[in-house]
Image (cartoon, rainbow, N blue to C red; front, side):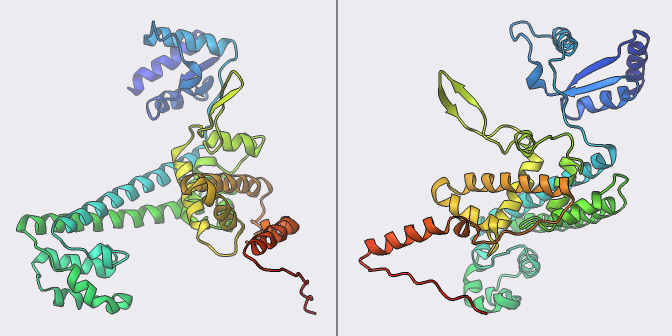
Length: 377
């Protein structure tokens, strides 16, 4: 309770304890940290760096070991954003949890449609879009005529009415219709909550007491693949002051998009990426996926080079690492992102690219003669 924590602070003050170390245990250690902060030097540290003897483990032994490590200066402080950034972080993390809930409801609705032999999701790319929800509402209220249901289509779906009639010809029980109604109501409620938290996040960015928050979001929005929502999440997880990360390599290691070190006897066992903020990692992968689908950009070219030999997941992590390096320099220099172009890798080593392409044509049986194209005036 708060009263007990206040007694703890008074007791530490009377004992003239200048330093306190607390293991980072999610929300449980936050209340203790907030009470003690200001009265003494409080360090929040990763529990991985303060592991004790597993054979003799109690809370008291853990506390003694933590105090001994702190006394010798062997603990590393965790990164803690200032209060305004922390408030934005609460909003962006809540927004992500609402988004996961919305995705879960969409998946349940699709599974219910499949169990009723309705294949709307295979015809409509967005089965829970505006017209998709109208069709599902009609199914939930008892409409069974597939021809009538297909007439509800609009836009590009009108060209797929024959396929819609086949997809909507299912067999629904009364229980399934009732469950579909419940799922659609919950989806609409969550969708409204998502819009509210998105608007509240914009207001928090615009009125934040921390300097450069709104400017940082605008600067990050200039990076390929990074939209307003992702930019808000990145600022909420990293803050706007990069002084606590001396280099972009340390930032990438802290974020968990850096190869891990596991070597023994001169043999490298694993290069699995380290653990970091899953919220930041999700935002970077989301931005990397969006950037990989843009045309004529450096990040899309990097993804295409890597995906052939490394696979989609590793390529996305690599592009996410590049994005984090770009973000670090954009926030450090307070400059907009300058696009290098989709032909950057070809222009970087034009002779090697030319030689490789000529060799491929020669292997196919062609005689290649190169002549430079005159530059237009």
